[in-house]
Amino acid sequence: MPMAVLIIAGLDTGGGAGLKADIETVSALNEHPLPVVSAITYQNPNEVRGVFIAPPETIREQIRAVRDAFDIRAVKIGLIHGGAIEAIAEETKGLRKILDPVMASTSGFQFLSPEDVGRLKKRLVPGSIVTPNVPEAEVLTGIKINSVEDMRKAARVLVEELSAEAAVVKGGHLNFTDVLYWNGEVFEIPGEHAEGFTHGTGCAFSTALAAFIAKGLRLPEAVEKAKRFVEGAIRFSRGEGKAINPIWELQRDAQRWRSKEELGDAVNRLVKMGELLNRHVAEVGTNFALATDFNEVFAVKGRIVRYDKTVKPVGPVELNASDHLRRALLKMREFYPEVKAVLNLRYSEELVEKAKKLGLKVSFYDRREEPEEVKRAERGTMEWGIETAVKRLGERPDIVYHLGDWGKEPMILVFGSNAEEVVERVRLLIS
Ligand SMILES: Cc1ncc(COP(=O)(O)OP(=O)(O)O)c(N)n1
Ligand SMILES: Cc1nc(C(=O)O)sc1CCOP(=O)(O)O
Image (cartoon, rainbow, N blue to C red):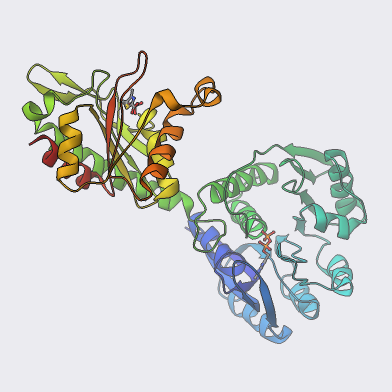
């Protein structure tokens, strides 16, 4: 049965941080969110314009309503106002609290005054698991933090002098290592830089921590899992809200499933063109790649090869079963994100002419023009080639070909906005 997690936080109208991120986080981790609105912010992905503070009594009544009906296993406290601190402290007495001391937005809007910070230290830090980032830990402890050693000192002060149950000082602003001080022990949780949007990371981390605590995990394990959850939420973040994506795992898995099905069906239709396709299969084999919205790429393991008079896929459709096409596709998607699929055919003038006659947009690159530094680099040729072809045409190419080079087979790449479109283009080209 899902565990109830009480969330006291503000609403971000931009849909990036605050309650929306918190509710998604708890739901994604399969627990039950109990959202208590502490403030309504007027913000978009670029700026916080203002904030309406919920009166303390409305926060009190919201908490009471759910305390009376749910078995609350953890409380996450995010953006709050100084005036509500007393009510929150009273109404959450006896509950396990995770306090994200939100002081300012990344864009610079100040949520807590110095007096409010003083009240927070006195009334909510004691007994809570506090999750400050480096600037917040500096304000709370007065310690200047430039190293992991300084993070350890700050975490220790939060527990031993300010009476927190535990402190997690997050190293995102420093070196990605988080420092947990708990039960007299220091734990270092290393992390890695994840590429993506980071707005809302503090909210998602503390809420994921609350959800893992609600599941009954020991604190060090809960911190480790919350950190990995947030790394995924950054890596699989999406452009709309310019923020982390707490439901990344659900969306990623759904997209993986759909893409595998779509490509599998398309490969089946393609191999039905066996005899016609046979002579257009490249010497190195033909592969067929399909990208998800998260830029994960499926392809045919072992490629599609000639087989007697027909063709056959060597293995099944799998994630990361392509190197060349994956890189070509991802580069094309940097210019044209709507392009999702690509397939390679053996080069022939006949196919290029046919493509032009069909009205497809054709471009090319010449490997002999590849700059020396790209040639020397391990893996830059496909990316350079696609960029060159895109820039040469000045619009989205449907077909990109190259004439090969020493030891490199000439090739035609057929792009499409989905796997079916690529199959259809191949059908028209070879028929
Ligand atoms: C309603 C609301 N709550 C929290 C924040 C802070 O978000 P952000 O600036 O992205 O900082 P982190 O949560 O990522 O540390 C907010 N802007 N709005
Ligand atoms: C080997 C090769 N070179 C290509 C090119 O366009 O230059 S296409 C290709 C075949 C597909 O490779 P993969 O299975 O790594 O995607």
